[in-house]
Image (cartoon, rainbow, N blue to C red):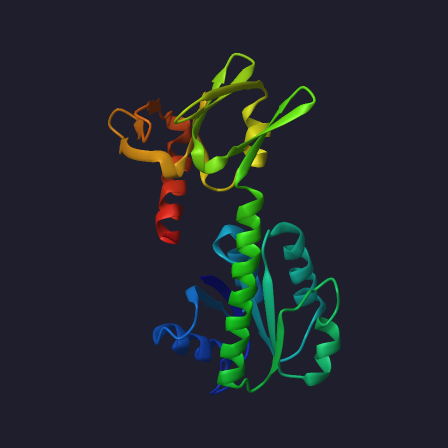
Amino acid sequence: MLSVLALETQFNDTNCASKILLTGCKQRTLPVKRLITVRNMATLLEEAEESSKYNTIIMSLKSIQDIHIDFIIKLRTEWRVLFVIFVLGDPSDVTAVVRPSVQVSGVLFTPPDADKLHKTIWEVYTEFTRVNKGHQSSHNRFVVKSGAENIFINTDDICFFEAKAKKIAIKTFTQEISFYSNFDSVLEQLSDGFVRCHKGFVVNLHHIKGVNWRDMELTMTDGSFLPVSRGYKNAVVEALTAMEEKS
């Protein structure tokens, strides 16, 4: 589902983009799970700092300014997935947004047609689904380098990683594989489905069977019990919450 952050500078218009989107969300006719609308760039910049919350930006503008274009170009370098839709009050501004550095996903003009805006959102959702699947497939295996060979392990089979001296041990239901590395390098290969719970452990969120916050301990699906240190507790809570919201 899409998480949309919208800058609406045309609120006074009866048929503005944000009102159309809000109606669509309430009627559940749009694939949008989160819609936040702001009225100025200061609030937009502040909200956009939490990049993990959003994948779609809508800029409803009476006129384009350099700050709007610079903002989108900056996000392109920071966000893994970003779709941008412009709703322009001045048709001549289209030349400012249709450029490689902006990579616009859709352009509409004021007043926006509800059907066209809905169609654009659904097209973005289709592309988001395709891109997201591609991202997930590129992270569905973990590569262990052993000399001149590479060992490929399905990340779904990994319960957790454990630090052992200068080595890292991968624990699955059927095997343990050790290799020389560190958790910084390990986490670079992994998707959001993994989180560090302790200085000595990185866990697969999908293999957490239970949580005991009193004893600061995780019960894993393979029967293991892993410690949670206080320094990593918040990271575990946030990761589990995010996973529940996605399900």
